[in-house]
Length: 278
Ligand SMILES: Nc1ncnc2c1ncn2[C@@H]1O[C@H](COP(=O)(O)OP(=O)(O)OP(=O)(O)O)[C@@H](O)[C@H]1O
Ligand SMILES: [Mg+2]
Image (cartoon, rainbow, N blue to C red; front, side, top):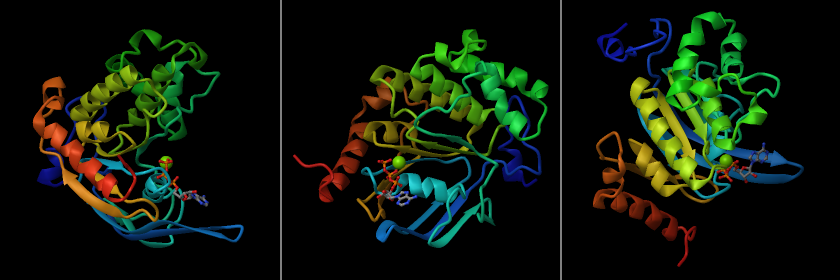
């Protein structure tokens, strides 16, 4: 383990071993995606280049249909790309990459398992011992306000609670990489705000390399170290905006002039491409 890696070992809970990449950097070079289906050709992504450092939190914003989910699936190796390369921690992705946590817009929970057992399914699927992860699962559930709901079934939870359980399930094995595709998209504004605050806390605790896809301009800025703004399809990177704001991003930070300026920069990108019109 290098000195840099040692400094990234988490402070509590399950240790990251030398065999596990600590906080995986991602290198995306020249990635394009063309879908062909029933004679229809869709150019979804066009020569996307992006280097994400280990422990970095990157938000991706872009109009609907510009290829954000496609990019996330390509990085995770869930679909094969038309061209270009993706490396995670130096290794080229050539099939499903499993050393990560993924959260989608709708939480997929198993109806017949309670909250705790839904979280621990991640451990069982990996052939690990659930007993060893129970304390960590309870700690994480407590951190997202589900401590008293560990025995509840998914049907007894609100949408926000289900999504919190899905986030804990994505983090329970302490992955070096977290990918989230509009995880708060289906939630009401208040729950969404609280989820963002909780997510920042969880991320500050472990600093997984995180890729966060959203339609929300202010949400993207509030969470990220850098915001990647994409063009309409074929999705290209229009602009990458480093966000130099102190953490945690409490309400005074979000009320600052600088925060508004970052949001305006993104809005201007969308206006330039006709995505937002006044
Ligand atoms: N498996 C597929 N086969 C054919 N076309 C696809 C496939 N997956 C995605 N597409 C097309 O690729 C384009 C990009 O889709 P994608 O889901 O990546 O967009 P997105 O940016 O995530 O949009 P949204 O913000 O609405 O979720 C769309 O035109 C979509 O129809
Ligand atoms: Mg999508």
